Structures are given as structure tokens and as C-alpha cells.
Length: 429
Image 1: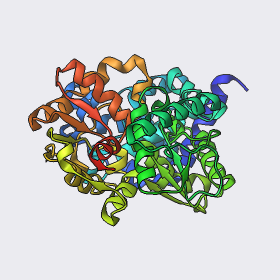
Image 2: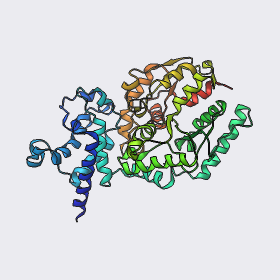
Image 3: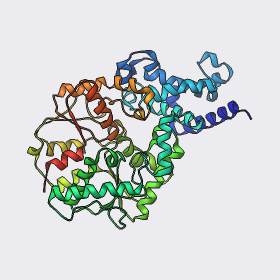
Image 4: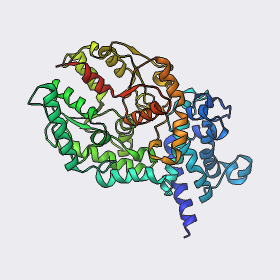
């Protein structure tokens, strides 16, 4: 069997499986009105037809029409149906990886309810099955599968970092009992973090540890698997996404934890909380929540005391797409910021209608699309500037990385912080 025939068979099998999960309705629905362009940050930054959400979805839909409709089989030219040839698959790569962050804003504003984002992800599933994931994105998936985290941080490096963070916390909080527990069984919580908190942003982990200690929480981190991210979700590789999810669940079971708490990560929350049980085809035996839900609970129950006067500068909030639009965590962060900040203002629009920052969908991992990513973030930069805020709170490290670049590019003069850091700043010890 030739490589081309083998790739075609794999791609067709992947298409067949994917459309069963989505439902054929979405693959027939688009009426080509073009209104979706008004909702897409990438199209608004560069209004060419290739960036229209409906146009992008049509490339995936053309394969469905070829193999799963009568007209597509007998007269493909009449309905714009295309064969899954190597050339067609190569053409699809930039469309579904380089021109879409899967933010979902177009779908909730579509006049007929077409789930464009899920159609685009079918394209990614097909490409993942045929070995066409962009190399830098695939490298992150490989890191997670081979080392347990996206940045290949060793257990010794994790323990070294948690040790010096613990030392700094003891000095800052004037409490010799503060520490970050690692690999301790029988705790209530296993805390999953973004490896960037170990490598580049330790203040997020430090803040969470200080809050957990003050709240007298029973918690631990696993040195074996502690990565809240899941880049198999981004790449369209559901098999890898399932393995990454299973690692986290099995580690929580090994440590006999009652609950998994996910640090501030948009796609990590969506992947573990909502997609994971579907991938594994069974419900979790442990509870899974966002750190935002836990922080609000601590404040409302009086387990930590906060003083909003400790956060005097104006703060605005960026809503990560996967956490808010797809994950349903909308109000906890707002309730928290109203309690811990003296001056909290919303962007316009906000909540489910907030614009993607441009860094989602694995875009930060794919340097070949870097210029488009930064250009598409201008609408977010304009949103931020209009608030007059000095601090942008964002409960997602991918968003934080993108916002740091937008801050520099568009000279916003703001500070990017996690919600956990802002809570820690306001905490009365």
C-alpha cells in the first residue's frame, strides 16, 4: 500500500470517527452569510476571505461532503467536495492551526448555531492522524508523553524549585511551618500546575502555596505528574490527550487524594474537567475543580482574610476562552476581584463575548504563525487600553504569555498577573 493511499485511509477513518461525535448537522449548517467575520479577532485584524470562520470551516466540510453525502460521491464538483489527498491535507494545516485559535466566539454568535470551533478541531484530528501536526506543537505533546510535563522538567528540578519557594515564603510570611508538600499521600488535594510556574513564573506557585497554608488546606504536588496543560487537546490527537489525562487521574489515585485542583489554565481546565471523562469514556473517581472556585470558597468561608486596599491600582480582567466560553467558570474570578481589589473594572465586551487574546489553540507553540498571532491581539490590546487599568488579571498562563507580548508590542504599560497572585497580595496573614 502506497504512503498516499495509507494517509488517505487514516484521514478518512479519522473523519468518520470525528463526525459521529459532532453530529452531521454542523457539517450541513453554514449558509455562507459571512457574519462570523465580525466576531473573529483574526479576521478583524486581517479581513481576507481565508480568515473568515465560515471559510475555514468549509475546507473541513468539503471532505465530509466528498465521502458522506450522495452528491459529493457522484458529482463532487457541484458541492465543492474535495478528496483527502496529501495536497489537500497540506493546504489544511495553515487553515486549522495557523488561522484559528478555536476560541469559539464565532460559534456563539452564529445566526444558525454552527459550531465552527468543533468543525475546525475535526480538521486538526484528521491532520494529527495523518502526521501533519506543526512540529513545534507536536514537540510539546511528545514532551508531555515522555517526561510527564510540557517543558521536560525533572522531578529533582521541581523539588529544588519548591524548596527555595518554601524558604522565601517562610521569610515573607514569618512562619517557619510554611512549605510546599511534594509526593505526600493522603492529602485532600493534588494540585496541578503549569510547568511555566516552575520555570518562569514561580510567583503563581508561591501565591497558591501561601494561600493553601493560610487556609489550612491539606494538599500536595506530585513530582511524577503535575502538568495542568494538555497539548494533545490542541493538536487534535485525542489518543495522546487521553494518555495525558489518565496520567493525572492515576497519580491522584496513587496519592489517595480526594480532589484535583487545577491552577489557572484555560485549556487545561476544559481538557481535564470536561473533555477528559469523554476521552476516558467514564466519569472520574475524584472531584476536579479550578483554583478559582477554591479561592472564592476560602474567601466566602472566612478561611482567608483579605484587604482590598492592598491592591490599590485599577485591575481589569481578561477572560480565557476555554475557561469561560467553553468551561463555564465565569463569575468566581469576578467575585474574587471585587473582594480583593480597590478598583476593578470590566473590559467591553466581557464574559462569553470577550475577545480571544490570540494566544490560544496552541498558537504560542507555533512560531511560524507568530506575526499573525501578535497582529490578531490588537483588538485585545485596544480593550485593555480602554479600561485605563494598570494590572490585567488573567487566569491562564497561555493568555499571560500572549498578553506580555501584546503589552510590549502595543506599549500598554500594564502588569500581567494571575488571580491567585492578586488574592495573595490582598491576604491578611
